[in-house]
Amino acid sequence: MSAITDAATHQPRVGVTLSAAVSEGPSHAYLFKGPAGSGKRRLARAFAAEILAIGSDDAEETRRRALLDPSPHPDLVWLKPVGMSHAVADVRQRVIQQAPLSPFEGSNRVFVLEAADALNEESQNAMLKTLEEPPAHAHLILLSSESEAVLPTVASRCQTIELDALSQEVIEAELAELAAPERARAAARLSRGDLGRARLLARERGHQIRGAVETMMAAAAADRLGDAPWLKVLGMAKDTGDQAGERVAAELGGEVKEGIKHTKTEIEEATRRAQRRARTGVLDLSLSLAAAWARDWASVVSGAPELVFNSDRLDALQEQAAGISLAAARGSIELIADTRRRFDLNVSEELALEALCFRIARTVNPA
Image 1: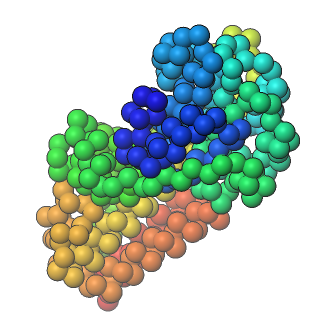
Image 2 (image 1 turned 90 degrees about the vertical axis):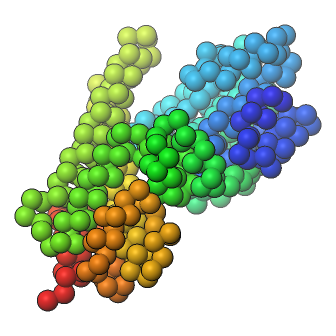
Image 3 (image 1 turned 180 degrees about the horizontal axis):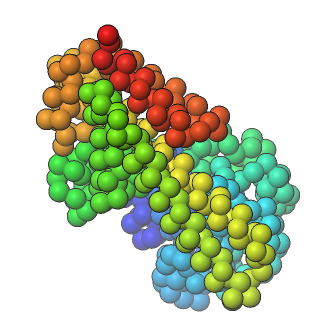
């Protein structure tokens, strides 16, 4: 069980459960539930490798190939969402239609659906028969950070594996080679247990996003918004979306050349979904960072600077907070939360951020 042991370093309880499942005979379906960045993908890949090793003529070689990302093992099917959601056609062709087929090697086939919460209702309903009457050799692993998006009819047919959020100490240790100690500490605090987010914040791109948000919040605190600092945040979100779209278009275009059928309309739609997913991801991260900045104002004003999330920017926070009341800091947090709710209603992102900046400025600089 070395693959599971290695993957479960920060989730030992889950490691014990999965190792026992392999020893006793794995179930037909699992739902891995846990916060983003808690290690679901890594554990799922290790679990899949051990399942595929059962009955293999060369278990070690089977594990090695299954652990590669992407994996060349023919009996490991790994489905990721393209853009904002999984395509129904992909779920039907790569999971539902392939599950009954006999393994190419060994005794088992494993189907992993990453971000199962991105499966729409049609896709989830289409999978019910496969979950209810699975072939003996087929094992499905669904990964979800938002388990409420998984239909109860699907979840009830899976064995649930609960993962815990990673501690700040664990995340900080993981970032040791990515950033200087102060930046790593701040990234770990700001990540809220999400290792993927922490790694982004520790790298240069994340540092740039943090800088854009800091500039926006500082401008609002000083009531100096003539340079429209929210546009830098929007620009970074757009750039990230464009890059994600280009990657998806190139990936699907490459599949067409290899004989996998994708129409021009499908590629264009997948590209748009990828752009939107990445763009909204950066905007949501930016608002989360803005809320953390406002909470740090409150911590400083309350005389508790040791509690700030942006621990590497304490001097700037103290300078800004000198003219901000505790009520104004808390009011700013509420304004940011309200803006996040507005984004869910598909309002104009530019107008919403602009309005947020002016509302914060009025709140922290009362006439």
